[in-house]
Image (cartoon, protein in one colour):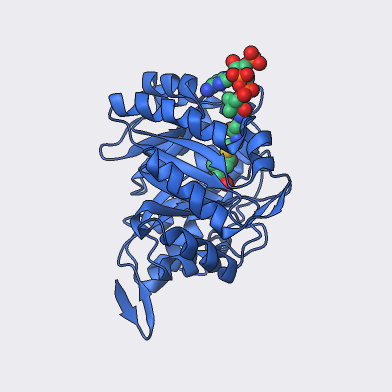
Length: 307
Ligand code: HMG
Ligand code: MG
């Protein structure tokens, strides 16, 4: 950790790009070629972790239905981790056949969201994950765990930090290598985020935790700055700020990757990722989606406000 005035910040962070999954799952379905080109462009920015698809029900999330084809046709860069969502053993089998480097299981700190999203209770989801983790470990595939609704749930209201803490601990105990804490609806503010992270840190090391913040109320960067000061060094973000969750209606995308890179650059935190290439990639995908990036940094770049 380095120290500026009284603030401690990490020297480097790991960025997990979730745009091709969390981003595109909530946008109009794109042609396969465009999805492949997006992953390829992202993999040339210096990113080392790209969530490139999801092996979930095509009826529930049609945008991810061609994930196998995406994995089959991307140009894999050495050293890049191409990851995916696998809610069950069936998803994992497809992921293994697609040659993924890492998978992720996902549950919620609230029962309401868990039921709507993956059609089971929290405890049933953890039972299901044990089978996923057992098979993944036979193939030496690390399993990340997402924990949604860490602040609020669209169905159950506020989530207590102790609930997040105990499920995060259970996910680590069953073999998840990292727990990504999801402010799925994006209602969190730095104080609430600090309380959740503090609770989880009573049961886990900072390097076992990732920050996955949606930006519905424009607080994601502030929340991230809070998390960085608490020693969190794994950040999920989405190019152009794309996305959201089909089961959290009204929630917007993750914090934009370009904005995270600009923040880290300003704080002297190394990411290993080229900001200008990320901005170009944001404009590329937005042209195909017929929209503008939500990223302030990409919008500023349009007017050449920085070099
Ligand atoms: P289920 O209904 O309990 O299970 O689904 P099922 O076994 O009865 O299967 C239902 C249908 O899904 C069947 O098809 C299965 O074949 C099929 P049908 O016979 O009706 O045609 N199916 C599958 N298809 C492809 N791959 C599979 C698979 N498994 C079953 N692996 C299940 C359970 C979890 C599969 C389902 O509810 C589902 O896919 N839900 C969608 C979950 C999802 O993708 N949500 C969005 C991502 S999570 C998120 O965005 C939050 C996150 O970003 C963090 C945050 O922001 O907080 C991660
Ligand atoms: Mg998400």
